[in-house]
Image 1 (spheres, rainbow, N blue to C red):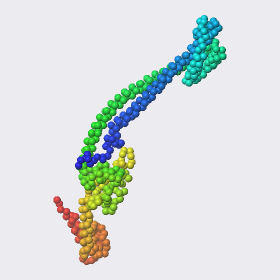
Image 2 (cartoon, rainbow, N blue to C red; image 1 turned 90 degrees about the vertical axis):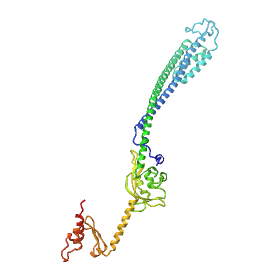
Image 3 (cartoon, rainbow, N blue to C red; image 1 turned 90 degrees about the horizontal axis):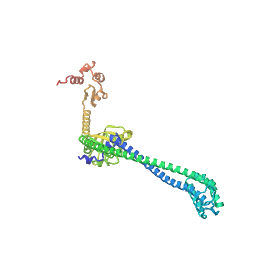
Length: 445
């Protein structure tokens, strides 16, 4: 028999079974845990890098907003200088600062562009307000005084211009501080992210080395397992007993050559949704039909208890009954109370059972012959107890057969000497004398 062909549907090999964890399985679980930790570390590192990149982008925008906020200061001073009167009594176009409010000596004509600068300043404030509403709102009083003076008189005095310049400087410092914080956070996040990625890369190398080592160990363990399985299959094929493993559906997971020879069927023919093949009859030892629900394999699976030495008859369609002495043992996964398979071992006792039946028929025939004789026949066993009292003897004595010892025979059956008065001693009873001779005259070898 080719074990590779006949034993393909085996139980799960122990190497990969969920029972009895091996060193390789534990190593794989450790590597799996490490891989999950590495994945989590990598994800955190990538997240930190993304946050750092976002912070860098926010920092760049903040530095742009610092420049915009700084431009408010210089634009306000430019407007102040552009709106101061020159020697002709008109506003100066030079834009030169004159904090004293004296006439500008440049003598340039009036600059008509300060309203455009004022509108640009209003746009810058609106843009900064979207990012720093509180800080921009804090400059609102100075801005209102600055813009209202320009709109009413077309000029602004030094006090008003200087107040707005101071407010603009405060706003610039706040935005610059925020930009610096964003830049520091971005740098810190980038360092952490890069460090995490480097650690994950180093740990990945360690993990890959461990996986290669585990792969080699598992390859060797698999080779050892296959060798052990081959030895097991050859061993069960060498025994005369039938060996079979079935699951809950009755599918044959393993069957040795002895079982196939006894059952006269292949593994495929025995596999099916029940513990029996279609058309097969199962019999009790008494010859009555055995329901499938009471088949030893079913009982072992349903109760979880082994079924020891049960005599079962099997009659395939168109064939004679074959008798087997069968044992069924449930198989459990570790930690579970419900079996997942059952192991059947059985021996063909058809010949022994036929001998027993022949002996029984012979005993019945001899008993019928003794019952039909007109002479009374009495016999005892090796223990000296009456074992046979045929019909003629019962009618003669008028009493049924009883298993009496020799010392009770005389009294029970009214046995006397020739005078009809003296009870017959036990040693003078012919059957007792024959028994005594048989017991004490045993030949010496």
